Length: 136
Image: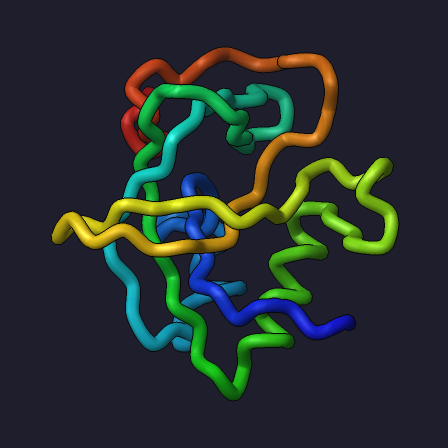
């Protein structure tokens, strides 16, 4: 894996606390976790049971995960695999990991990694609240 900037990761779906992928990928591997938002739109794919983020002027709710320094590369590699992101083959990646600005619950603005949908078509239904945990 080539060296990447060690930014916190913004999660908005199954990687959030209390969701199915949090224990496997993030629990016990973070220095700090807090509520945060990014600009964009959120969609949900019913047949896959997962959300995706697109660029936009809406507000998407999630969490900022600051990864433990000694586990950073391993955790980020596993997140890339989960999100089907290959930095050497972005054209065929399901998601793209990109830098974006997050606003933390205390109002602080920080740069984070976020995974954006990389398919040209919008499939699934829009989560108008911008919050994956409030979709039902």
